[in-house]
Length: 110
Image (cartoon, rainbow, N blue to C red; front, side, top):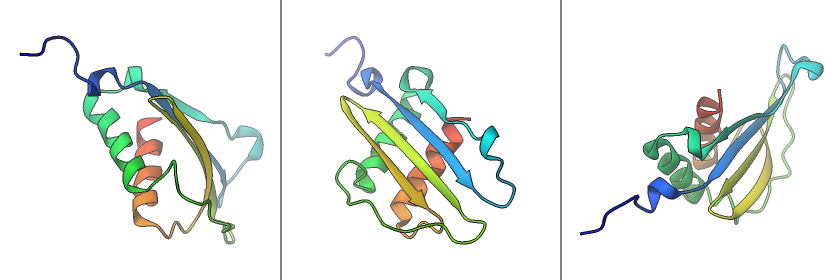
């Protein structure tokens, strides 16, 4: 029988998001929101890691899309277990897995 923390409980990292654009965007007030995995429950850490895998966050080719009028651009950064990457993602987000990841990072970093 194994004792102590499981692999998922010791997962280290952080999630970051910065939002630019949108209908009522004030550039001077925009700031990056960051959440450390230390501050998240195990289920939330697993959710971020799973969504990152589903969206191939660390291996995908960045899209060249630009946000439309009044659209937002999200800069999402993830550091998970020693891997780190930052992507700029414009609305509308065409990849459903990437859209779920952006939504989860926004929700958990508030």
